[in-house]
Amino acid sequence: MKLMRYVGLMWLGLMTPASAQNLLANGTFDTDVSGWFAFTTITHASDEGAPISGQGSLLNTGVFNNNSSFPAISDPFVVTPGHWYLTGASYKVPAASPVPWAWYQIFWYDAGELEVGRSDMVSGVFGAPKDQWHDMAGLSQAPANAATGELRIYLQTAETGNPDVPFGLWDDVFVLPDTVFYSNFD
Ligand SMILES: [Ca+2]
Image (cartoon, rainbow, N blue to C red):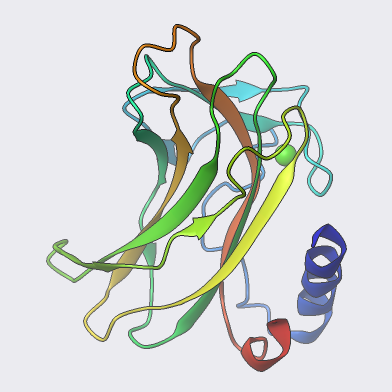
């Protein structure tokens, strides 16, 4: 999976027009977590680098466990109705965190900033090993009336009553306009 994605990104970099850039203002968190918002606490972790972009990650720390999820939300990005978007993210849950899984989803909005749909959820594996990075990738089509999107990257909390603080790390998050890539990706 990692290799496939890495090769894919290398190939994308070589073969696609310069316009095929990450629509997210900040997906590598090299120096900060600008470009993202959360109702929980998001901070920059300087020493938890993912394999692709290296040091610098987004740390999202929840408040308590209630068997639900908490997102970090990207700044809005402009989309073209009907076009496909290639998405991806890596996450890591430290052993001290009870977070059992992670997933993400695009929320689509029309020109009036009303929600007009959500992409399919792209999910990690429930109970995936802690203390290591895991990758997710997906492909989503913007609805016919979509003008912008935002990516929401979620961590699932533990069951209600679990006393351990839920937290996890994100890195290498991207949304790319799919130009020549679609039929070759998966
Ligand atoms: Ca990074």
